[in-house]
Length: 211
Ligand SMILES: [Fe+2]
Ligand SMILES: [Fe+2]
Image 1 (cartoon, rainbow, N blue to C red):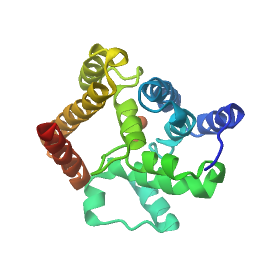
Image 2: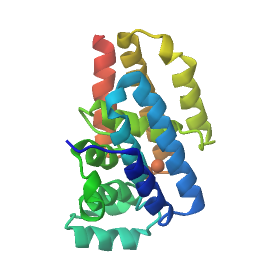
Image 3: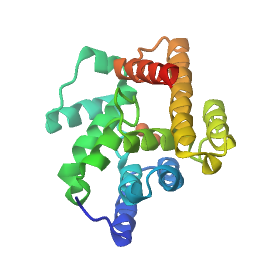
């Protein structure tokens, strides 16, 4: 397990700054701040790892679909016709694959998998994957209606005051709501919905029903 220090995070923030637009960098730093708040509630020992994951999560978000494809080719990632229909999901795969190549000091499985699954979610998500996914949705830089709604839903429930069981349930229900909103948006755009997103939502609905 790697040790992540404050100077390492400062260095990472600097190099990410040089690769992203001002707007994307603002979002990235806001996600870092949000994972700190979420880790405090759920897993303080994972804070440094998730801060690194937050800084890395959108590293390739601003590449064009053509650039994503050539990056996939150079990283040995397969590209299916289905992937081409949903170009927004490329960046999670390419960013995750770039970590061991370009930032080997952060190539920890918690960091890489949180980055890998931050866009679509998946079945059997780990807690740290869920927290980066959620932080990316509700970070304070976001003003889209759905993001504001989800942020209010989560923090409005007063997670600090809840028992660990209720807090787990709040995370689950917040994620279900996020998938509902994402899927609804994709439907209205006639865009494909990632199978992983459907599976993640169905799994959490089942968990909620059995709770
Ligand atoms: Fe992203
Ligand atoms: Fe993001």
